[in-house]
Image (cartoon, rainbow, N blue to C red; front, side, top):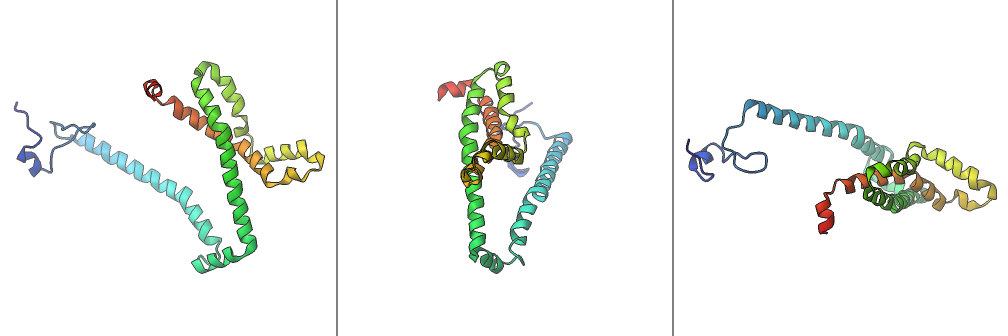
Length: 193
């Protein structure tokens, strides 16, 4: 059995050298079952992206163009020219950015601390820190009003209070994601850096 070199002209007549799974030249032709597996995987990814686009992206696009009235850019410009609309948009962006910053500020260090612990020791702390994840944010908002609303302060109903409640509600997502990401890093990379 003679081995074929990668630069052999007979390979280039058939479209070039075949590559194995890790980029090395493969000496064997691909079987029909491998081609079916690749086609099935491609079809699965295409279906998954289609479902994602239909369920996640199309409602956002519909909301953006539908909220502008007729869907034209001129009506969107008129909507943004209105002072109240600009104020609502600014408040929404401020609330989202503030809650994200607070969730990152609490969740990332908590995830780092949980990732450094052994999993057998961290399960109870993880469970307790993830409690706000199972509570709807409006329940936390009502608890905030019940706890601090009797003091008569207008701060209870302010933007910083809404940012605090929403950030506290969302930090477990950041905590669990950062812990999972840090646990997936091999120990040799942690010690090298």
